[in-house]
Length: 84
Image 1 (cartoon, one colour):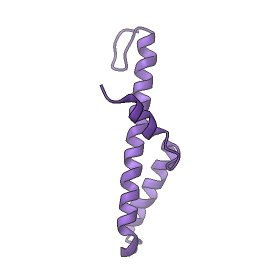
Image 2 (cartoon, one colour):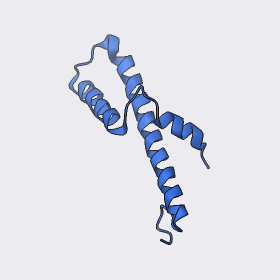
Image 3 (tube, one colour):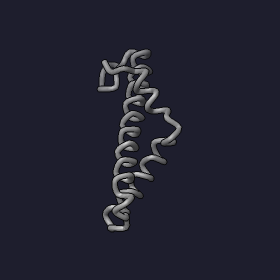
Image 4 (cartoon, helix red, strand yellow):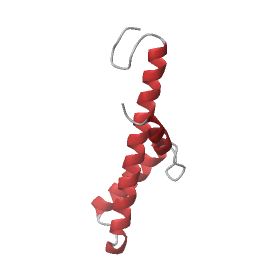
């Protein structure tokens, strides 16, 4: 199984805020890239930021999935349709 401590640490990084805030920022970066509003001097930094935000969101999703699996396991089920 994945390293739960690493997932939790990535999910709690204050640099990115919560999942919703990160997704809003990703969408904003994507919009600026699609519209051509990004200066060539900032293009790489915007793409790097978007990549880091995506990784952060993936970490938040993994952490949530693990948390739900643990909660359901305590009650005799699993996150993938097991017994309740």
